[in-house]
Amino acid sequence: MSIKIPRIKNPVLPLFITVFVAIVIGCASRSNMTVEKQQIPPNFGSFEGTLIVQSQTKSWNRYFKKHFDAYYSGKYIFVDPTEVYSEKYADTVEYKYLLSRNLGGNTGTEMECLYIQDRITWESYKTGGTAFFGQLILSYAKALEEARKNAGNPQALSKN
Image (cartoon, rainbow, N blue to C red; front, side, top):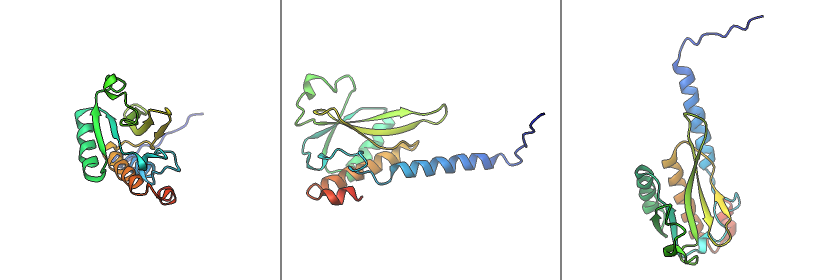
């Protein structure tokens, strides 16, 4: 018994379907980033210190700066990964949170998620994964700013 695999007459269709599925998955993972979904630390809204951002590639850093400068009103600083836990950033009141990224996925499809680590409790808060890191950074900048705006109203934040 042999199984006959049909030939695809239009090779553009599988490519279109793959791109469409990636976009849908990417959009679904970026929407509704909340404290309730454990993607934002519960006390982030009242944080007045400086967010440490673990420096990545030039392209990633450029997207981060563009979106966080436009949508996030808090302070942040890029720090080389080798210096994150150095004496220079040992003050966990000023530098309570570390933002970084996590890459993973199958060959040819790299998924990225962002996470914030509380440097006092060592708890981590992670976004969903997507192949579109620029959009993910933009969405997270807006979500973190929303957390800052709703610091006095936790019910408003968990409904976003």
